[in-house]
Image: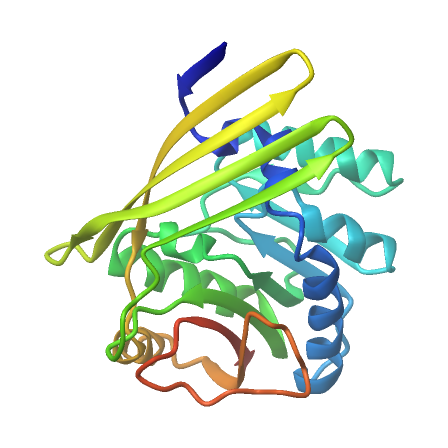
Amino acid sequence: MTETVEASIYDYPQYYELLFGSDVAAENRFLKKCFQKHACCEVRRIFEPACGTGRLLVKLGRAGFDVAGNDLNAKAVEYCNRRLKRAGLPESVVVGDMADFQVDGGFDAAFNTINSFRHLATERQAVGHLRSIAGGLTAGGLYVLGIHLEPTDGQPIQEESWSSRRGNLVVNSYMWSKGIDRATRLEHLGMNIDVYTPARHLRIVDHMEYRTYRWSQFQSLLKKVPELEIAETYDFSYRIQCPIQITSRAEDVVFVLRRK
């Protein structure tokens, strides 16, 4: 029998961690190589806004970096700090708004790789976020930002599904676009997460809203925070040796922004 709940996947950090953990190794390698290739300072302190379960923070902390982060979801923050503690690292993640924050002592690099930036629903929030990043970054430091652009040529991706497994725990996900409100630039997404254990089938029915960005709109946003410049662009294959040129068909883009 299926148990169905209407809830946010962010309230189930153990399932979120499994579902979005497949790219962690590639992202971890990519970030380290980005710091070496593009930073004009020594990267020691790293900050992740909207860090969720901290899947990358723990790996980077174990590699010797000083790591910290924030997230609006208290359950995710608690889960992340427990993971940091188990790894022998400081419990350095706090509940906070990525649209407006300060980090004591600043940081040399920051990252936000899987579209969390698009949860910022307005231009004011997005500008506030980038200004908060710029205000905390060391000169020459980096912000690695991965977002899904809306292509202006060709058909955009309308749905995707993926599955993850750990032992007897299986998590399947199906996400689809319900449409875009052009007045607000908000894309409405449905998401069904099916969780299977030997004794249970739980379906989490979620609804998300993401702000849309065409390449021209993202360029316009960056002009409002002139302290940040684009050092390089990549795609979600995370190949440091293969930067990309953004075209009208571009969708998944990783911007390496540098503090002037």
